[in-house]
Image (cartoon, rainbow, N blue to C red; front, side):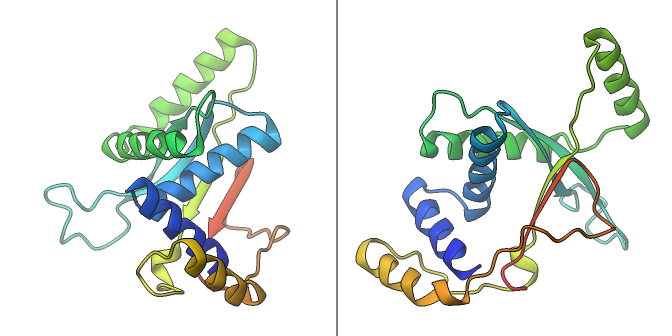
Length: 177
């Protein structure tokens, strides 16, 4: 949404990070506050084309990277820093054997006697549909004015379910419908 994009950029400028890490922090804080889940586990789509030999590959070279973010006893800006570190860690370690992962999860569930739910996903697709607003981050009165202007064009959908996405929670963020 345009309003969310403006807000993400303002916080990104303040915290000197990317709007994607601010979005991830917002997701983690929202899940902690609304659902009482902390630390938060989220799977991010990690593009692994940066690895040597994959730059010219044709086909999907991505995998869900497991990302854990602790929101306890932290300001939002501190959670943004934690999200940055967690996302970087998820990207660096996104190569894994899915069969071995499933075995490990089954072992942990058996040991704990509880289901381990890691099927929480955040898919930030904003870059795929292009920027909604100008690239520079606004602050102060400029930001408030810009938010008032774009609020009528802002749409959030809570009830859409796409059959190709599964999991306990799947949040997909696009810059346009």
